[in-house]
Image (cartoon, rainbow, N blue to C red; front, side, top):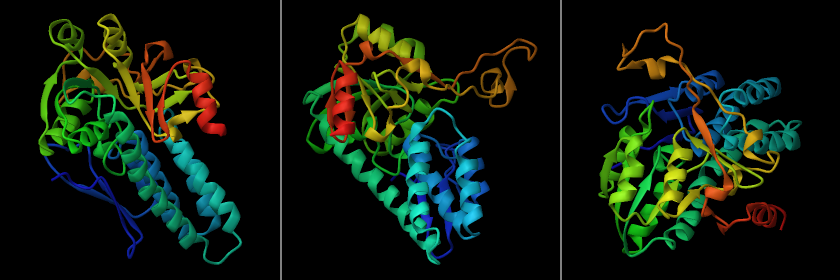
Length: 338
């Protein structure tokens, strides 16, 4: 059984997070007693995955509210600077900020903010299930798929986006063989996706990121499905580094390439992928394996955490409002402004 990614301990006003840096070798949790505990947990990737980050940030504001109105404002500012690419973080903070502005003059604003964070948590699970229902309809009764990074229950409040599609397919009697890219440099595919799918009884095989194109040339792949950290208004999508190359390979081999993400991942303020900020992380994530140097530290490293897949390579964007199709500018405008 999968451990719970995020748990709100209401009586203690404490946020309990699964420490995803230690999974699968060790299952341990981090209790966040302060907003700064939450912020540091987002930065160091104790909690990761765009929807999960958004939920954690909401609880971070709720924790801060115990310290008064000024603490809430400081929390929103601090949390907004933790991870620049995942737009769900900003969506969640905007939602908490709007509620705060409406209730800040009330004596019970802390409890109102806590209730909103709990609602964001619950909403994420239901949204995942809705988009998963639409996504599973794209898959055959028996098929083979590839996924990249981890877009499952561990990356969300529960159930998952891309992996949620696989769960919904299984619940509808479909049989899937799933290839999970290992996802260098932090190995979220090997450590988290493979663990998650194996625990749930799926037929899962781990491959190196560089093997996907060759696999597509040798075996019939019915679809590639990944999550997303931010989707621009034209459909360009930022996701874990390596996603773009996977989409290029899928296009070459006529394999449908889908993004599975809640509508909150769409950032209408980003007209194209060029407007999406890309986080760059510690070079030692590449220089080291198990804290051992694998090449001289004097050699420079480029370590972007995400890349951007152009909209023309994406066969469909699976959301809780349905499956969007190219041209995405019109489709996205319809669902956001209807």
